Amino acid sequence: MASGGARKGIWIAVALAIIIIVIVLIAISSGGDGGGNGY
Image 1 (cartoon, rainbow, N blue to C red):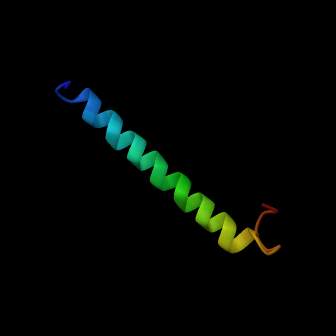
Image 2: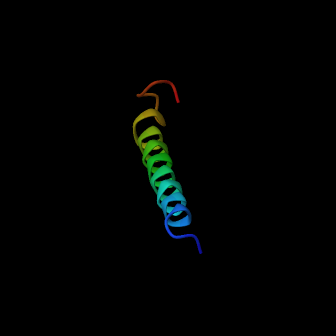
Image 3: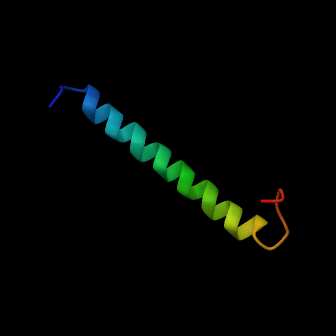
């Protein structure tokens, strides 16, 4: 494998996945029942 590039890409992908999951959970918990930003 590459010395640092592939590992850095994996960490970026993991960080993006965590951010997306957190946003989805917040949208479901706050905006799902009419409260939030309309989502």
